[in-house]
Amino acid sequence: MVVERMEGVEIAGYALDGEEALRLCEELRPDVLAVHLRIPKLDGTMLVEALAARKLPTRVVIYTGTLNGTLMTTVHAANPAALFHKEDSLEDLRTAIRSAWTGGFYVSPTVATVLRNARTPALPLTPKEIIVAKMLAGGRQNKEVASLLGISEKTARTHREHIYVKLHVRDIAGLTLWFARANLDN
Image 1 (cartoon, rainbow, N blue to C red):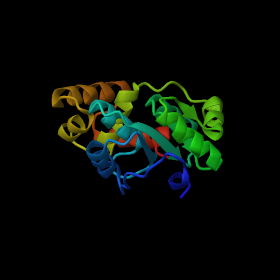
Image 2: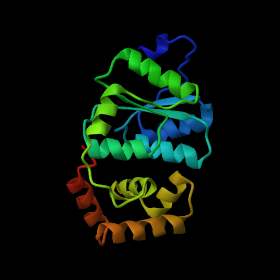
Image 3: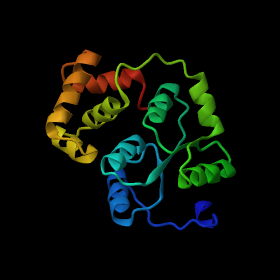
Image 4: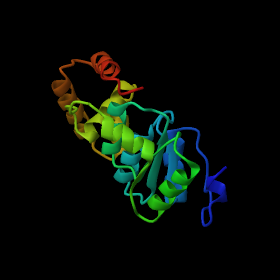
């Protein structure tokens, strides 16, 4: 693997899903976490939020294969340390990791083009509300959302209520349908 051959980089662990990645970050305290946007259970944007809620210093590099402008705009708003597209060069990946490691921010050329060309209307939700909504639409309960994001259950319920009002939906089924129509999962 390219990362293993990078000078000064040591692989601390591997995770099969986002919950395991979060647990490993709490346990091992890595400087950088490289994660696929679509990792199961907690996706890349959810991991950025969960790490911040736990005040962990781990910087997140999200890599993806999507060219969906709406989705990439949402991911960018979550404020990861770096965004990398699988079509970019291995040198771009190295740059993304080094940038995150040294406290910088990096957007790979392909992601920058997608963001620049994104013709998406402003989403009615804040970045935090998008993460909460994705968790709720994914079947998580308020208590679980609260625990993962380091907020109270009451705050999670309040986010849920605001999300429903802003999106004009009444329940989880409506929320899931809204996400499908907004094309935020492709």
